[in-house]
Image (cartoon, rainbow, N blue to C red; front, side, top):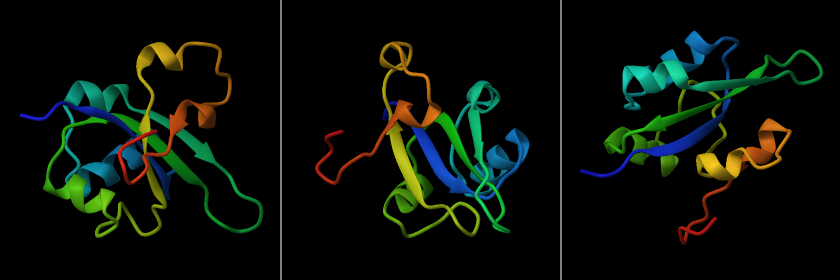
Length: 112
């Protein structure tokens, strides 16, 4: 069994915690109920008439659907743009003030 990983799904068109996590559940992303409750949501409002987008950060269990999302073969909702691997808890709590600075992009060779 593979270990859970903390991921940030960015660019989801959601305006609430419930809506964001529901979209991930609908895409068959797996997590425990406790992790869904602990999931963090940051909403970004863009200028103009575009709807707001959200970044949902949650500890997920690897599965086939998650693999398809990570490869870009499946999306969460209509307009999800990126999935990021988050730093561990200790790194997150060391002086970062902006939620967007708490995530790192996963590169193709597995480094951060």
